[in-house]
Length: 394
Image 1 (cartoon, rainbow, N blue to C red):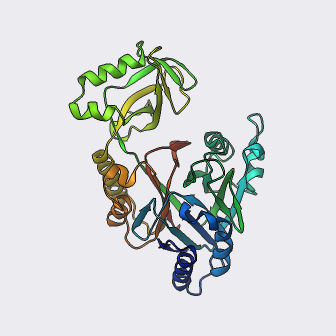
Image 2: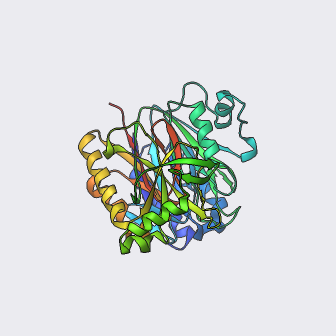
Image 3: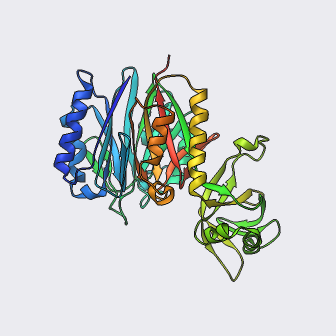
């Protein structure tokens, strides 16, 4: 197994493509390119139709997959809202690679079985170890797709991120071999001689105490611990520091407890969701996820210092536990993280390379949502940096 990567922030598409494909060709040497994963910023949107075909031909690559991005990541650099093309190429002996694409209207119904999902992604034989997924957020119900894939492939790990760079339907691009799509989702099944570790660093810290949802409907919370949510928020606000009060005005999130039976507070994980609206008339709140009575929630605040410390702790613990050689890493970072939250560019990728591995390639993009598992389910996250770490089996 061999991986190599390249990135260019040239505003010229032709120059950028020439730079990265020449660099990749040199790094590959005589090795066969089985897979290329490419991310391209929206500054090059007029060339979306040509990018995968030109890459495939330039490096004689068997399969190409990728998507558009608001910014790309690679070679120790994060180009947020800047021109960029980032690519990672792999020579993968004893690994089966199956690219796919589907539209919303092709998805199996809730009544259909696993075979329907296997058919739509082209799976034949045993479950893939990994599913890489790049949905277009404007044209497909990502949570429905994730639930369907978990149902059909319970032993597979699903990772990925929402395509970005576009501001309305039809502006994001998905690349599969020599084709470019502007709707649906593209992805990749990977089976064979490799192992995958997944790290997810959130950007929030808890505020207040955990509470039980005592009345809800779909994604609207009507009561928390028997009180109106707006009252619960006011109680937290009244007890908060002046700094937290200011942050609550524009950085308040809600966390949904994922494992309520866990006794290890260090390992408790909340899935963070936006608070879409607060209804001052009814006192209810609308959040970006369906919720049911009995679930435990805790309010959270986006916090730059916590985001940095959590990632550093996560990476340090992983570094101490894992000893196998890392071959490559895919990194998906929220468009709301990066310089906007952390106050400086290149923070997450540099920390990863300094703590974990400065030798293997790291490639990715700034996304509209990051996909990774918590426990035995796969979720769409926000404001995270997610790392998919590929290692060769012994």
